[in-house]
Length: 236
Image 1 (cartoon, one colour):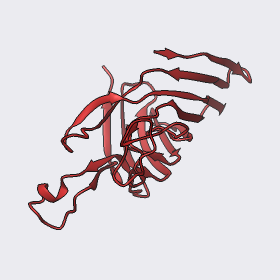
Image 2 (cartoon, helix red, strand yellow):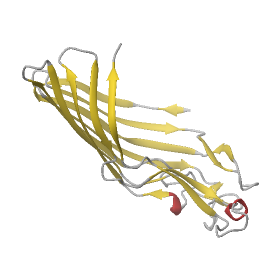
Image 3 (cartoon, one colour):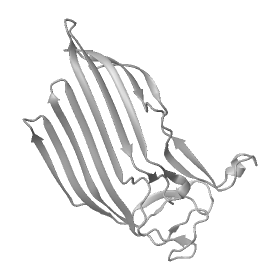
Image 4 (cartoon, rainbow, N blue to C red):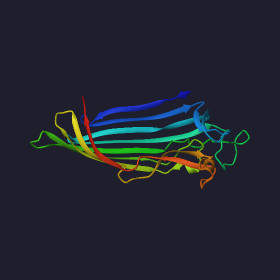
């Protein structure tokens, strides 16, 4: 069950050159379900109870066009999330049991996985005609940020992803009136290494046929590295 009171505003300001949206929210989630490693077999995942949680915060986004050629977009979000009734959860390896049932852990007051406290983004684009060609050139750049967060539901410290800032750029050309555009781009410009997901891999020693991998290992999946190329798009 989800109870979700939300209050917000939507506004057009400065002769419609500024669009502003903002809201504050508070959600209560009861009988939440999460995917966790099977505690009996040590392999595979099951859907299990993850108690109740409360999520509250605010979100805002804006688009500002001070001149015809330039557009600036931004967003910011703050999220305060915590377990409110999860007193008999599965423990990660080595975690002292302190739950209400034998061998379990109390997660009350802890922040659930995939819940960064702060996120924000900023993007700007400049587009102007190339005199006498019927074409327009455009250039844009964007930056996004997410604060640290756990990537797996048991909140194992090995699954903590530090804050991540990603930068992208693009330069291209398009007709003043036409359906196509060609651009060169770079994403994750500074080649930031980060994980998008991680999980316990307790059978590592068996999977590696007794090699150097140890039991109770951890495995993660990286986000895309720096990528760049040329892109052409057509609208039909």
